[in-house]
Image (tube, rainbow, N blue to C red):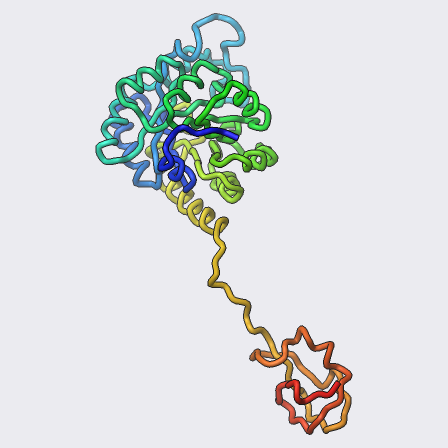
Length: 339
């Protein structure tokens, strides 16, 4: 299991639906777009908004070797050098600090994904966010994970195969990890999910799903199997042009999906005591019957309204002797029959 050193209050928050709107590079380098995006994300059902704290050099190096170029024909980034791509997508370092501090005033949660230990130090010194996130690609960056965990705050970590990755990480003694099943397809589709990995995570007290799909289905499935933390990429509108826009939700899409997840969370954990079994149908005589006749099935009908002898007991009375004259429409009663 995973040990937590953060507060019970934080733990209880994460045991309820906790929806993260990931802005990533959908601000297009425009501070005004980011300002509007964060505000609208909260209006659209987000419990928290996540930004990113990185520089190109905290992610890679400008080495001219083949492995530093994206080589996936189905990727919108195919052929791009990673360093140049990150120059375009990195958020200015002071923006996460600004928004974390600004939204603390209204008791709303903005936090960030740091991509190096010094980014964690910078965030702790200048903003002290409530949460940290480790991206799926950084799952084996031990120094980064350790620095995040040392803050004694919840650390969301995306894992594409948690049944293998999480045990390997826990051997290092990491505390405070909140595993998030992640599909490394952008956008992801139902056929990309390894359902067994979702079932694996059910053994942990708190877990989530980092969802890069465009529909609500995969997150709905995760919630119905115990996930409480859901992360989706978010953009201000469908006019956003960025490296992540093609798998990001608009405000109306995000709001619609979070409302569905709320209903699924409630239904999947409901054990209502208001439900009562209906009385059901009852047994009536379908014709006149004389005393002394042997009761046969064709004398009877099972109809509404209910009450009296349950039709579940019908077989135990067929073959008995009628004790008195019966009129069509009379309900079968115990004193009508002798065994």
